[in-house]
Amino acid sequence: MRSPSLSIFRDTSVVILLFAGTVSAAAQLAQIYVSNEGNGTLQQLDFATGAITALYQIGVKPIVPDDLTINSAGQLIYSVPNSGAVYLYDPTTGINTELCSGIAGARDLTITPDGQNLLISKYASPAQIWEYNFASNTASVFFPKTAGITTFDGVTFDAYGNLYAVASHNMILQLNPSTGAILATLTLEAHDGINGGDGLTYDSYTNSLWATHDGKVMGVGLLQIPVEPSGFVSTSPGYTFYPLPTIGNVDGIKSDGLGNLYVGAIFSALVYNIPSNTIVNNVIMKGADGVSLVPGTYAAPAQVSPKSSFQAKP
Image 1 (cartoon, rainbow, N blue to C red):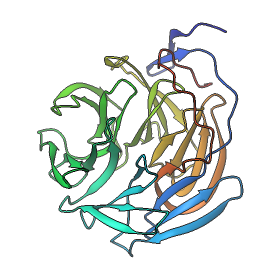
Image 2 (image 1 turned 180 degrees about the vertical axis):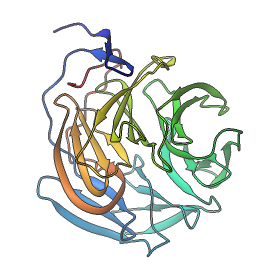
Image 3 (image 1 turned 135 degrees about the vertical axis):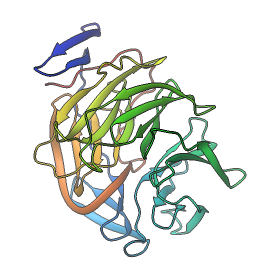
Image 4 (image 1 turned 30 degrees about the vertical axis):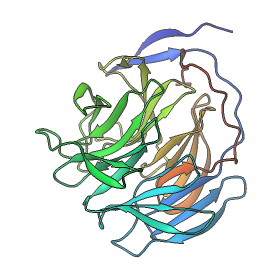
């Protein structure tokens, strides 16, 4: 086994930070839950068969879902931006419950590491991040309106408890998980209108954040952002771009910790395999947005300390 080491690569325009190391064999692909903004439904996709199952009809445009996450009980939590509400759907009972409302432009979601709170990014002005407490059933502003921040999209924690959010389409902020204060800023390329950085997830396989991206120059692809206990490994530039030239758009993203990233790509749902730097499955699914892995449908990775990272093949 080769010991992981920090490597620096250069192309014609940017210095790229990567971690080189060992990659593992591909694992069984998970099934995923999908929030479909095209037809206003929650769905389940089986990549092995291509079967798409409708679970719950949310509404019709403009009352359609955006992001999707899952709690420890296997229940789906999803946002509906135009109604400003966040809901919980239980796939076992079929019961749908409103958790909170009054957050116009509610978008991406993440549950805090202790499982007690839900963070909700607010895309519409004023750009904010809200915090919903499961025990008290109350929501309040976690990150307030701040000069220079026009939107919020993806939000996630890494394995060290650090908190990150995609802001203003072309920044990723590291935030104090207790106070919401900005600790560090990683700037991406100039965004193209409303396109830019979007979904955000932590991947234990590479010990990196991964973001979906549709930029003005680089185009559609994925960004790998290595992290360490203090947060970003680097902010100059601090990321590697992997293009997905055959994909129209990319939005929601989740990791299985086994080398695969699951992406809602608006016109399809796909699986990107990190070590091979390839799309290994892509199912036409018009409207696919938020995604979450279905528990029990894949071999979960062993719980290990995130001490090393790996490099996707360029």
